Image (tube, rainbow, N blue to C red; front, side, top):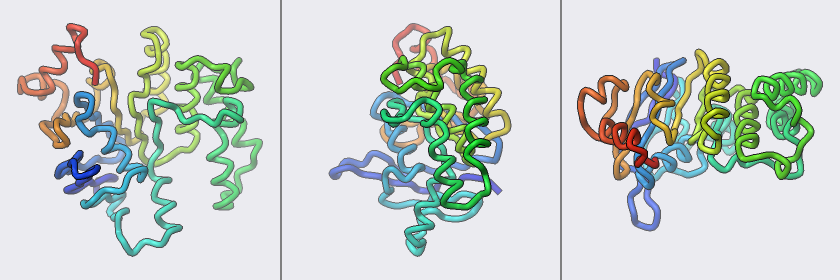
Length: 252
């Protein structure tokens, strides 16, 4: 059974349809990359998956359970968001907390509300280890305004890994990094995400070539899907975006 199934998802804003009949599935442990031009609907799709937006219609199921079921209680609806861990372009760090506190906050709140038995000290040690792995061992006590854009993004990525959701969602997760830092973070991310179920949106097509499957979104629809090699061979929308980016013209 697929860990994630999306069927006939639709979303409109002010009468303008942004998502049209989006359907796909994802097996546990696989990586799915979603690409498309700016305004194609890919970020709206991820916001619907994380319940930051409510779809007009359709189905989002995790391990066979429809998370859009209207009979779910408010508590169950809140729990739905625990299935997904999301890193957006704007990081969403809390300015009043240090890097380490930002990383550990969600896990500490979950431990309190769900009575998981985890101690604050154990959570803190895990957070410290993740920040070390992200190259931020000397920035744990810094506040967001004291960090560069790339450092903030690494904090946001570490926070999601500590939250340990079944499905990771990364929206342009390395877009704020220079090429050298991006390579380092991409390596750390590859190591941390090994065997995890992951959805990725990225500016640079080079970061998604190894995905198990790639979806190309155009005008709110899935224009094509397949592996990197399959889509290049098809010489369609993906091949066009890929070759355009090689000329320095693609900005997804």
